[in-house]
Image (cartoon, rainbow, N blue to C red; front, side):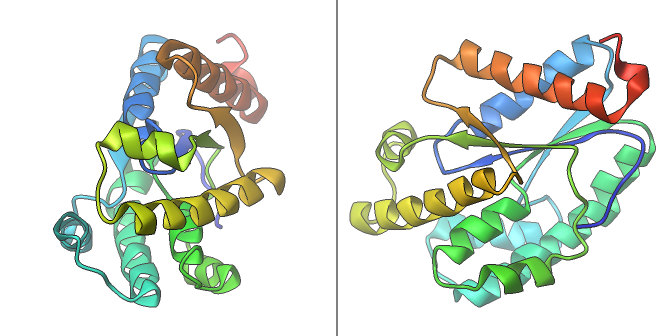
Length: 207
């Protein structure tokens, strides 16, 4: 992944039902209150490719995993160039709901080689903070109300979880248990983020 300057790039990722969207928005509000200008965004994006991906995902229609990697990468590139990098360069910190890690986990869980997924996404900016919100697949399914074939869904989620945990073990992501109380989870995420920001930029040490 490439490096970046100015605002802080923060990613929350994890399985379906882990609470990443709610927690991303809570984190953005907390950072803004702290005096860190922040914006929320998500993948798939609102761009042309992102809109297509959202339609496909909501329809339940399946695409070949390799094609999914390429489409998500195309949307990611567009999202970074037209929004994320622009706002970072203005001094805004970006809290992003899903990122490259989701491609590694979900398309990797369907048999696509992780090394190749990384190569396809070698343009991606390296986040200042990457947090994995852990939830067991059964809890995630209950939170979402159940979608798709339960067996198929849980099998994919279990495999994806293994890859996320591998990323944590390799030091690419920071682990947070999202099955705790909402307020406890949000406080842990906030503390981790502020700590990483302090490490990255000395002039934020007064936070």
